[in-house]
Image (tube, rainbow, N blue to C red):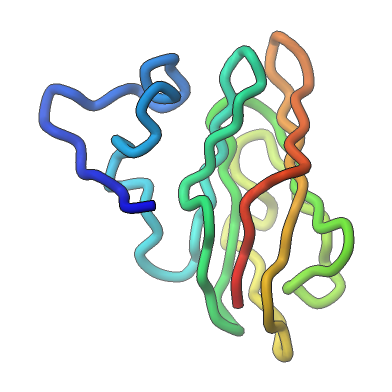
Length: 134
């Protein structure tokens, strides 16, 4: 999916209903440029998730972290993890450690993960999350 740059004056606020209406109009500042890579998590009041980026392509040694824009969260790799023995991350806003976690030597392939976010409306879980590809 190609990301479109926002047109000045038409920049939806992340986390707003308008933001979820046009996920291709994501702010360029949210796109990953260098390690540590930040995966941004957005979830609306109905439990619809949006991730930026939806697929992270990274290499061994790159650092990865998650940032929830809508509440405390947990990220879990249920079957296998690219981070050695670390398979769970949590945070009130940015995952701990804030500097991110390095992808372990020998990690290769596609890694799927699960996200849970706590909003005032309830806890929302997305088991069909995006992926990290090494």
